[in-house]
Length: 206
Image 1 (cartoon, rainbow, N blue to C red):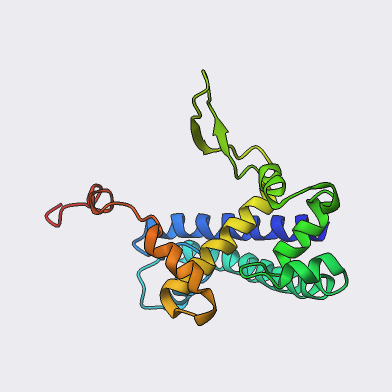
Image 2: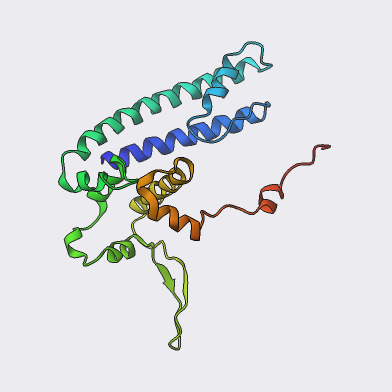
């Protein structure tokens, strides 16, 4: 219930931030995505020099109050999850892995089956849905994309944690991740081609 409650509050906060961004974008106030950027919108709403109708400011403050309240609730739940992650042996062991925090550790504790029933790590990966789809026929092996047929919560958290570790290796070059650095040399993190990033750019004359 702790995991689901935090997930619900985070989703509601994201929904309200996106709604506020969309409303204010119609009045020329644009902010980047994510919970770290609504401060620009809050400063713009509080700025009396901004040409905003009074009712827009009123509704904007209402959104900001709800967002702040959800942020406080999420922070309280994060503290509870940190304490809960120290109470069980499995969560403590999972927390020692790179990219695994209290939220991921508790999700594994709550949603994963008894790990003693799995013979190897690949069985756990298959249970998560991180193995490729099999399209083999006539003795010829054909592997497709990840099946994503398993437990969604743990899979999402593990992928997010893994991407954070990869970005940290590229940015800070920690000495303990030499094997990961060699892996990134062979297979770098995928990024969209430049033609994709510029395809929808609006010409300056429009």
